[in-house]
Length: 89
Figure 1 (cartoon, rainbow, N blue to C red):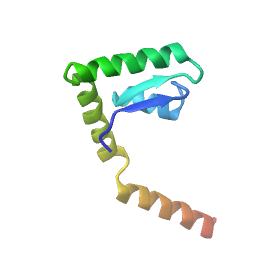
Figure 2 (figure 1 turned 90 degrees about the horizontal axis):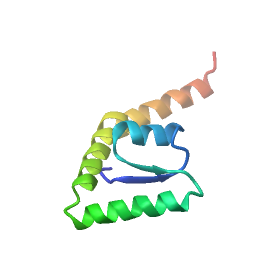
Figure 3 (figure 1 turned 135 degrees about the horizontal axis):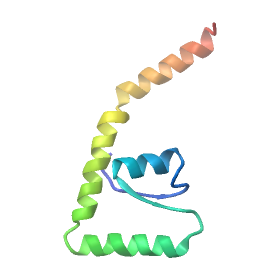
């Protein structure tokens, strides 16, 4: 929705991979307090100095939303899934 993402989860999982590939945010492994602290510090410093990195991540998040997660696409996929369940082959 046009907001940078801070993902605390597997970097190589579906969400982490999507975030890294799109450039819309930062991933941190669960339990890695040092990495989380570093990420928050870097993002805070970016915000304090004009937010160039945050703006870029927001733009990437918006682009990702519009290309991969449009409401009409999501509804069509849900309808197809329900149809497959209701009328299995």
